[in-house]
Length: 289
Length: 160
Image 1 (cartoon, chains in turn orange, brown):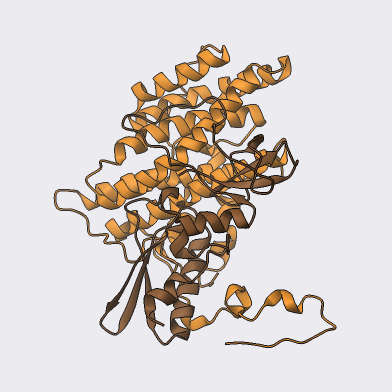
Image 2: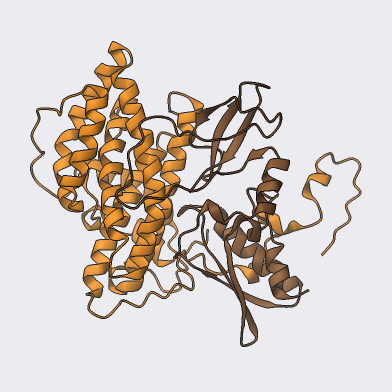
């Protein structure tokens, strides 16, 4: 298809080039395939693995990524400078990608986890899981759902999260489910960047000014009670401890003397966050996006 | 033109100087019955360009007379080592710095508290006096650098 545009009055005409395929308005409806991130991947659950258990585990891993991604995306345009704004958006995007793969994997392993939608709804399984479940059905840890504080709080939370998740994903690369192990292998490369980013800022803030150190320590003290649930859920207490000790030593910071937060389930913050995240999708269960 | 040549000529939507073949995301093109099945692999899990790549592949192949379907492959995970020599030259010609060898690790991934050291050179003036501005750039796969020689900022495609 070649369109010859010779509109000398329109300064923007030449920008479009000759192929509309690169532009949203040029897309033909008949070539819109589903955007299933696992399109064509063999999602058969290997013999010997419990499909429901695998789905529940992928939901937990996916929900952690989804909720943390949403919290990080709230930083967009609010970070201390442009580079960190971009960095946090990148990390949020990596986690959103992990969430899409994991929620899709959960749905393929056990379709009964996907909420029912009105007949004729074009909403794919990953979106149904993200946008049409209640807070009580989310399996994420509390660390990822609490509202964000200042940049010191962000750095402390991201360090704890990325450290535990990276350790877990390194182990999951050997998981018996080839889909989950492939998702983990991709995730390891991404999480290594996230952990380094948080750890460098942790040391920088700790060794910076009195104010930056004060804020970092306040943030660390606030999120530390949620660390026990995180490492227990990911089952990475030993691996995480080694890395955190290395960061804390470089930063000259002691482990906070605060105990774990009691209870389980979710804080009220998750419901509020989901209300904002889900409202548009829920208003249009038959919508095509 | 055969189906592989059509698919191989499709360009990356975010780095259009690279074809999908040069970027290393095009894994396979084969005939299955009356269909052409193209297998691609994402660079990063959240790469937003995947949907566009998929649409572009189907679109170009259909223009060339092929009914095409796109399949995703997650394993082996994409590595920046798969960017071809021609792709690296195209990156440099367009002002981007090409990645060095991807990190390999046999045990746990080591913590790196200092900025990543790379043998990057400025794609404009060739100076080795460059400094990292941010490990995260405008797309998932690039870091931001600045040349302290000519003072121009540039993007470096990250080792992955």
